[in-house]
Image (tube, rainbow, N blue to C red; front, side, top):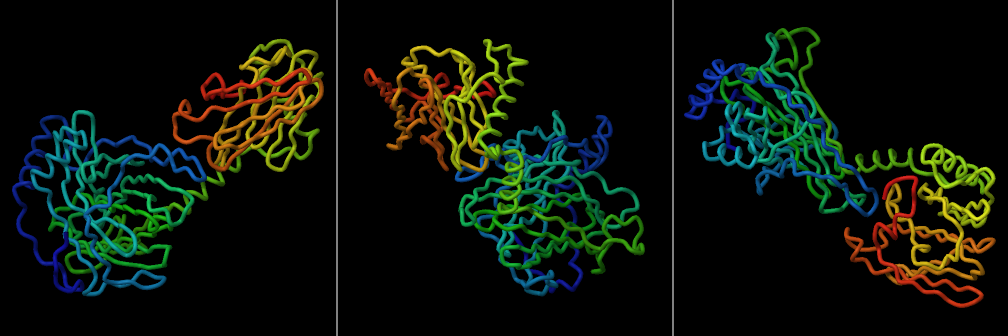
Length: 488
C-alpha cells in the first residue's frame, strides 16, 4: 500500500519507465482522435448533483443513502506525524504513499462493477484515502469513458459529484487545477454511533511537473493534524483524487484537508497559477469535509425553519385553521362548508399539541396545527358509530417522531379511548354536541418496521349514554390517512 522511501526532504527517486498499461492507455488515446474523442483528460462533464441525503431527524437515520467511497484497505496507514492546531511539517516518519497503476485484472473488475464498458480508460491508479483519526488508507481510482459518457469509479463503485470530470490542466497553469467534488453521508444524532458514514471525493487536474503531493488532514474531533506524502508517477501528469471515507465516531466532527504540490526539485509549485513563481500565487489548496455533527445541525435548523409552530393562543389557532380550510376550499371544491361561520366544537390545547374541530351546522372539519399541520375533509354529522368514523391521520414530526390524531362526532358521547401499539392509551377531548378530538405524539414511532400492515391494530372504545362501541382497526391507507391537505 505504501513503499518505504528516503526522507521526504529529498526529491523522490526516478520511477521506472511506464509499464504495459500506460502503453495501452497511450495507444487508446491516440486512437481516440479517429473516433471523435478529445485527447487525454478532455472529457465531457458529468452532470450529477451531490447526493446528500433526504433526512429524517431524531432516532432515525438519513434516508436515501447510496454506497459511495468505501474505507479502502482494511489495514490503514498509521499516522506518523501529529500536532495541535496548525498542519505539521512532514518528517522522515510521516507515512508515504506511492501511486500505482492498476493492473489489467483490477481495471476489468472495476469496470464491470462500476457499470462502464471502458471504451477509453483515462486514469487507473491507487490513491490515498482519509479514514480519520490521523490515519490514511488506499483505494482504486479509475476514470473511464464508455458509450453512456464518462464515469469516475472508486473501488469499483461509480461516484456522483458536482462540477466537471477533471480535464487536462489549462495551458500555463503551474501545478494543479481543482475539478469536481461530491459527498454523501449516513448519520444519526448520536456522536458515538458506529454506523456513521461520511464519504467524499475531490479531484484535481495535475501538471506533469508535479512529483509529490503533501496532503494534511486535521480532524476537529481532537484538532489532530496528520500528513501523508504522495509520490506521483514520474512525468505523467493527469488527475489526482483526494478520497474521504470516515466511519463511526470518527465521522462526527469536520475534517479540514490541505494539499501542497511539489516539483522534482522539492520546491512548492503554485496552485492554479498561470506563471511559475507568479507573485501572490496560492501555494496550497484546501477543502473541508462536513462531519455528521454539522450535517445534523444544518438539517435540524432547516427543518426548524419550516416546522409548524404552536399557535400563540387558541383564537390565533382557530383563525389559522379557518384560513387553511378556506384556501383549500377555493381549489378543491369541497362539500358546502363555511369556515368563517363555523364555530369551535372541540379543542386540544397543550404545550405539545394543538388542534380543533370546527362545526358549521351538521358539517365539521378537524384541524391540527401542532406538531404537524393538516386538516380532514368536510364530514357530515351522522350516527358516528361506523368503523370508518374512527380513522386517524399519522404523520412524521420535523425533528423526529410521529403524530397521530383523529376527530369525529358521536351524539351522546361520554368518552372515546384509543389503545395504541405498546399498550399506550389516549383519551379524546369531548366537546359540544358530541364532537371529539384525540391527539397523540411519540418521539420514535407508533409501530415497528416500515410495513404498517404488520403493526398491532388500534383498539377504539366509545362510551355513550346508551352503551359502548368497540372497534379493532388495522393500519392501512384507508385508516391512517384521514387528512386532505396533503398526501399520505
